[in-house]
Image 1 (tube, rainbow, N blue to C red):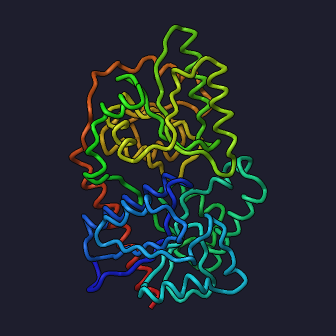
Image 2 (image 1 turned 135 degrees about the vertical axis):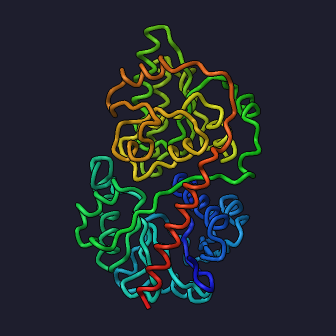
Length: 387
């Protein structure tokens, strides 16, 4: 299915500190392409000089990914709208030309009306339209401007779910005929799975039975319903432990501290155990040994944590939103985004499992292969039709 020569596809690095799900998406995509579609695409990842070398190191280990560091990419997520004035992002385009790029993958950065490269735009979700009250007016306008520019410039829009595609066609009807759904699937590398979960439990002084919630601390991720469910269970003398990890929202830095103060005030500090932003091998170790994954989010484009739980066969307790139903179908227990009693019932009734460390499922390869092949097909079509 690949061309005679690999398509050199430009990516801009998604920082794990800013958005762990986006970083994991890129890393898993590169691994999937290398394993299932070798020779089809060469990912060339452009990062700023100020980007964390530790984030680049796992990406650079994936063959044949190339990494380019340049001052032209030292800008924050969604901050580069200069090309709206100058028709093209001259610094970025110059870097692409120097590294013989054939096509460009846009995410949260618009490279200009007159970019000479075939370009696809990845829109992970349309949260600013669905939950506008969670954004400042400035952040909402900036995000909307970026999406409108990509739509008006005629980009092919890649979305990760049918749910996100429906939202896109509703809000941006001009994209009709220019959308592609490429459903992400996760197959972590063997290097990330070497860590024994028992070591992680010992390091953080965690019990052998726990639920895992590895969402970023953004308001729409809806952590508070977990506190409400734990409080209800405490009244019944039931005290399960929920382990949480992930970074704070750079747009609302005080939210995490406020949340943890509330947990302590409600007497739930020992049941809601927050570990911070932990290394990826620890994330996978905790996921594999957990009683179940919890994702209480009010909105997702396509949940990375759900895909990772599916990869290992980890039981799931999920908010009842369209995309979770699309992803997990009948493999999860569901609760309304404001229904703490139902979540509490799921936690209470969940069978107390024996300690087990799960391995990657045998059927996973087919899903990840489909992800990689769908991605390659989309990129090849965009390149072909632009000639």
